[in-house]
Length: 399
Image (cartoon, rainbow, N blue to C red; front, side, top):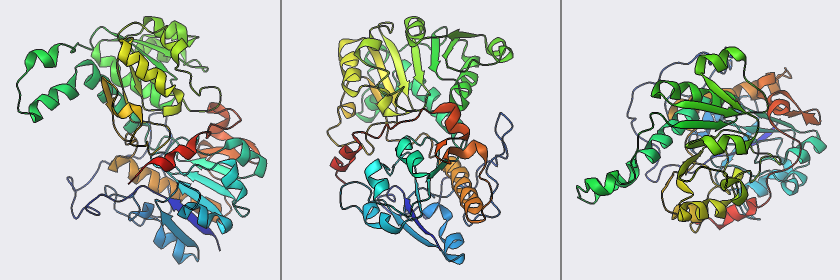
């Protein structure tokens, strides 16, 4: 029987909610491209409840233990003596979420001789050293599309919050003020702006579709060009380089995966090509950006605002400069872990486990690495190599 180690974020400060703001959530059966939502044989949770924290256990305990498997759930993932490290020696499967990632470095993989599969409950498997996984023949899988719309909604929300100067205006209310001039001195309309996405996959394309009614000019950069019919439908301008896109866009949103080719793609050099006063939204991965270059661009005015929810490492240490830099709209990594999204990625994780234990094929769209090579979505979106360097800094976070 298998030992499954599941790394999840901490419970709410006051414990799991005794009741929720809503009684139910909409049922989503398929995604815009026709892919079906997760289809496990059964689930042992109520959709709309908190599943992504330690006590939620992704709704997996009954299923695993009733089939003779062992489930270990922890939020203690960083540092040499973490609970995760203590449990790796006989773990067959490791599960974690991008929001509170178990950084599966080559060193950790070496400590887990029985490890057969690493699962991302969500989207994005850059917290795993994919090269090390390929070298060991470990399967890496994720629940593709489960929270793509969740993230896209967060992107549009962040754009509007930055451009309309919402957060400082809200803070004036909290402080008891009515300082209209202070609120609007950095407030603009999104209408008429040029907005570009770096990558137009599931999330990026959804962002473009959500933005179309705002009467903006839409641009995209992607190594896979969209069908001509989609370009015409959304009146898209296609770019073949980051420089070409950033020179003309008022708002840039990053929606590409992190791998060695995209690490620190936004840096001092590339930021010089942005329009002065542009806004940058990043809900993809923090390490796409050079941390200190973002701070410098905000302080100089090259960027008018930076927002999103992704950091490196995660959790971000208390002294991370993005917490205190000017004109930011940062949150913890929450865009893809709404209660709605949790129901889908918990179901998808169970579907992957059901297939694994039954020795049935895992959906091709869920695969990142299999059989010693990039597979499925991984072959389409990732490159071989490792992007986990520096993840040990996550141990600096103090609870």
